[in-house]
Image 1: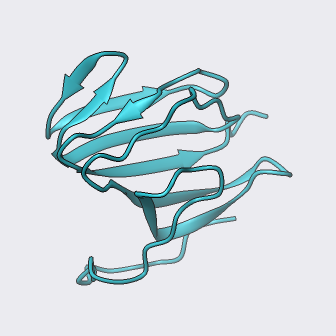
Image 2: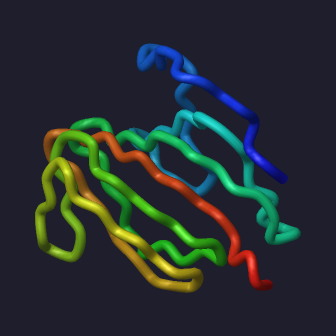
Length: 118
């Protein structure tokens, strides 16, 4: 599954948000391109993920795809450490991460993909 060809376009941040399956209320995604087929380990996607002020998770996440995360704005607490804008994480499959909390809210750009060698 390849992503579609998209040229520069304005992103409407006022609509199109949804709570991803398994996430608590106050954490929302907006898919920008692509999709993941987690059952068949195929695909890739780019999404925005936002935490509303005060949103948090209680358990670590573990998934079987690669994840790259760029923090665009706000603050995000991970393991007792607070990160601000212009920070980045790259996580291989099966890497526990979180729980997460955002006192003031934040916006993340995430890229998810399966290992091309499998």
